[in-house]
Length: 310
Image (tube, rainbow, N blue to C red; front, side):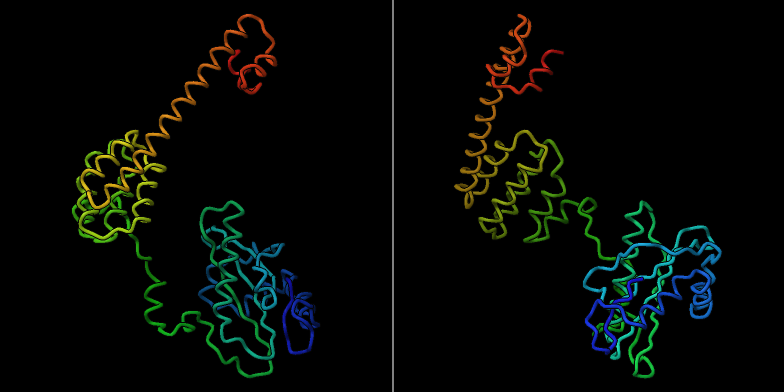
């Protein structure tokens, strides 16, 4: 438990207070922590916990920006169903209550979940943050339900209690994608980017580029994506055909196609030179020439020469 926090005593944030140290002395004792849980945890949550497996976890996982506000006591236990769970004890000991404490508690809980995953577990744990308040103002004036911190709690609850919106382009029919206006070209290409033969897409993509305004930077990004991420071996031919079918972007597309051609020629020449060096190296090795000398003459690394010996 890192009992750092502001409590109105004039101590700087991060310095422990007598309140911190005293609470830590008690709550790091598993028997006392068990009593705390039995006293203060709601019955429906207690019912999920196997208190006989309660143990103190070591180490800090609260993000640095939150440490002035949090204790760092973390207990883990098994749930009655046998799955690992976590119970967290959070101490807020400021003289002025924090209206955003519920959100801070959520961040604290997410940090504990991430720690659990980092330890190699596959499923998220049940994390129960508990706010222990002992400030001057009575009673604690703010909601501990983090959704209440939003301007529209009802809409927020609907969002965060259900499935997040999912755009799975792999399940959207191409005909439907064609109606997606300015998103259509990107979506269509991303859906089919791993196809080796993209010729069937040329007319659809050309139709989209003719129909919707596309900035030059976006066009270049689209083609770069095709070349760098796609698995087609005919990128240059694809771009040339696209240039022919989309005259308003023809000049730029032809420039890209020419660059691809030059890059292809350059790579071919470099590959040919490398193959020639390898053949020379093999011949030298067969004639008993020392591999270090072969490396020096051919420009191949000693590791590359060693591979040619086998």
